Length: 411
Ligand code: JHZ
Ligand code: ZN
Image 1 (tube, rainbow, N blue to C red):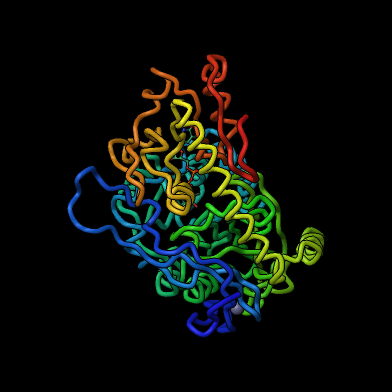
Image 2: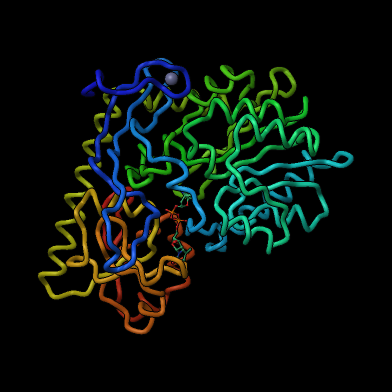
């Protein structure tokens, strides 16, 4: 723990933040510049701490939200078939449970390309996606969903309630942890939600980040890293109750939290079980957090040594998946085009551009399949199964994957 005097108060409860990592100046993870683009890229200090009162882990500094989420925001949730079926299953669950009453209504915060709501729309159920990124809002509409192209806050929550009536479900996937002004968002949800309604959100689980040393989950867009303990506190402070917490295998380990108005639902046993697990793992203990920081350094050192050795041996090495996460990994380790010739990615808006801060060219996966490299660093490690099965010819032809979560290894 260090420099506690310069840090801002906790965004959830106003308590003191104890800094436990500092990754230095970093670019925004989804800011892909074109080669030769003039002007400096925006950077900020990527450091984080834990609140000594409510235990919420959060960034100390933040990038302005409209700089992160804007018209040209490139990430498309539907780029993974596993994620498509993950959200289709959830839509089916909502339709069969929370939305099985007369004229139900569901609102999704950060509806992206409509990956979840399209199934709800196809079932003819009233819905609204709230999506501040213009292109994504447009893609969502093309996919048949109704979209409000704004940032969600208290004012918008009240406006939706006036225009559409109360919501049975408010849902947010990989969005809630991205918003610094959660107090306003929670007041907006309070205004919008029906008395029996639920607010369901899923985000990367800090317990998995620590256990797997998946420090690349830490970048500008991820402002909060939740645990069951911190969400329980936050819910109570805003007039809600945490009634369910379900671990999810996606995106390297997440939790789907369900909040309801106090006393309206039975609290599921998973809440107590996970609280006990977190206590046992010492997730809020300074010693655990110090160990995490040491593990980060070890992974970086091991990865850079391996990549240098392969290069000195004359091997070709590329990156697979220009993920937002990889911005932290590559910048923290100092990995540029001298160690990774290019990174391939299916997202058209990323192709022809450069990885943020490290300037590695991003190419279509065709570049990969046309001439397999000797090694590929799996930057999209959270999609390992899907990518490895799709690229089975790479290994069959003698290629090898390099992975770095939880440890650096060749597979
Ligand atoms: P992926 C983004 O993070 C940003 P990223 C955001 N902050 C967040 O929280 C998560 O999403 C949910 C490509 N790919 O999902 C597509 C292939 O090339 O790990 C993507 O660019 N081939 C909102 O960017 C990237 O990899 C494939 O077969 O870290 C994956 O990005 C597959 C499956 C993906 O999220
Ligand atoms: Zn706090």
